[in-house]
Length: 338
Image (tube, rainbow, N blue to C red; front, top):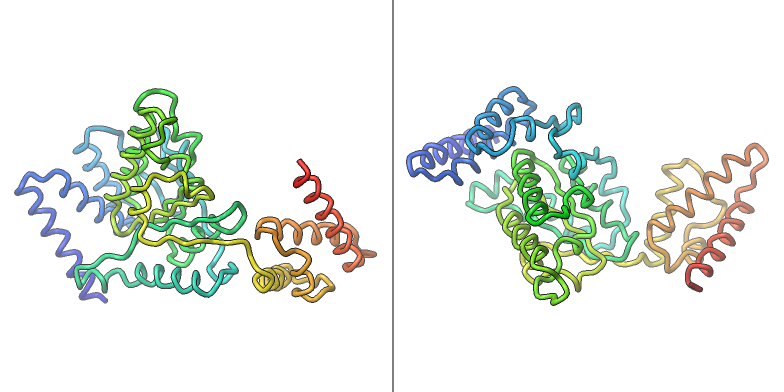
């Protein structure tokens, strides 16, 4: 591993010198960004900041503080970056999730590629770096993205559309560029929830020219992500996505509503974490909760837990579960009756 690391470092230095000799500014910039990300991963913040300072002066576009960011979260990005990018500490592991066997295998393979990135690099290959999670609300798309960041022990960045999308011509494109310039200096997962809101079909006659420019810019930025940055998009409206967007995501996962077996496993995991029992076999409750999303099932479990704790010392778990099932049925009936 040490030998491979030295070879990789030597390769970066050779590329950097070659870029300078050729006057290739783009290659020079990408190589230095790669070195910065490596130094931040090793917690060499002073060296990384010094390199970033030189890149910022080279770009002559933004102030150096825009890209200065500590992975531990001790210091956030300045000058507006924190208004459209959140650094969330990942706490959910892959084992915390309930996925079908096919999805688990695909995700584990994806994670393995990034764990063994150096091996692939030795054969002139790179890990897949773009993943699209498709599914109805509450099926675990955000949790999956967080778990990937957790398993790789890298930061989890969530894009805030309220800060990204501007009202003036060219503003959104400029902010996207600023976001990606920053993320290229970090090793992490960049997560776009509701990706369809920004990656819309460009041939849609109802969309103005501005969204078409945004999508074109977004596709360009995704294409130029370094291998140490993982881009994950989530959508529950895949039909709205631009056709070119699909080609950018090397791995596409369909997350469906859980079946009864998956609901049963989810309840077992919840009971284990909460150190409590619901008084019913998990598969019995699973039959009553069939058709719900993971988010709705989790809210049901939390509701049971809250009522039980507040009812102590006289609380009776089975009665509370029955009451919560009744409340849930009434809530669903009201929702579906609208």
